[in-house]
Image 1 (cartoon, helix red, strand yellow):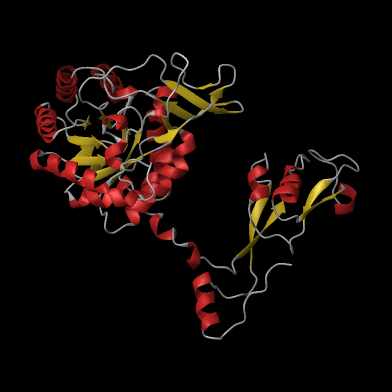
Image 2 (cartoon, helix red, strand yellow):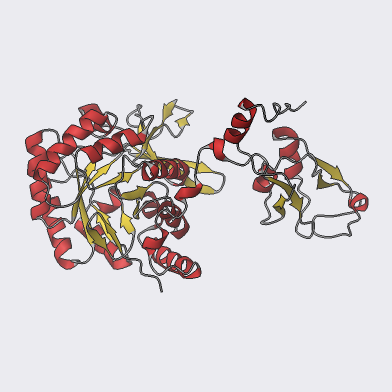
Length: 438
């Protein structure tokens, strides 16, 4: 069985699965439950000057029968006193000495940062996470994303922390920026030991069309919230890879954003994260989801012949390059497995109205097919015109049957040629411009 232990900038953990800073990590009681379930680390809900929350805090984006594909919150940092939080951190760390306990912090002045860093260290925290990401409430006070959106400010405050810190410091980055690597580089310049990303994305999930107020509604009003959950995973993966690939960043990464199962976790790690953090999925399903994450990641690593999770870190990173390097001559087409086709014709509709009009409808008799699932006499079924198929994948994505529409590589005998190669050869007079489609 593969070794799942990790070491993020000196913070050791029995596995890469951490509870992210948020409602599931608000108390010592929750931290105990998380570790009992099998989580390797807990990032405490952000500690600072106690705040007062509103009563209506969450809203969600549902999609068909799927609940909470996106989650929105206007909850702020911990409303419990720093004394209580640091005392409970100490209690948790005494009971779980081999698990990672990280103190998330957010305060205002240089003196406060020094004080809270010392208190977190004295409580026994293994590391500190600087919350430079909260996109609501706290940013209106000059904190959270108000810091994370300004590299110079993030660098200055990280520097304040590093003046006092004797344990690893993780800078948590906001996605509400044009270029997330700018703040990541600033964190490195200030001496940070690692980064974590992403925090929540500024959002409005939906509008109640009776009182005409977005959700969550507070006495007839609402506010921009922080968006997370499965829907943000593609954005998070993109930003994690951007930081992992940037040599000027060069920091270990704790990946966050839409992670709900072992496969999600493996994807983040393969793009360069050392470990991952989970919040929304815990709020939806509870701490025990980590059991399947353990089992699934272990089985996957074994199937790939990897003896440790560290072997997976960054394995997918080299394959992600600029579009201009991709092979324009590589070709594949869609082929339909008629033994699996149920005759819904979604592929035809999608291709006809939303893509390249290369699927026709033919009767089973015209195609020489017998009767089968979804096939009745004279009822049309889809047929791909391979000579016109551009290999866009849309038909395979809308098909409700797994592996019914298969994207098949075609050997066309053409040598590889990228857009960059094409421009070079064109400039050298070695080829003519490619004719546009009629």
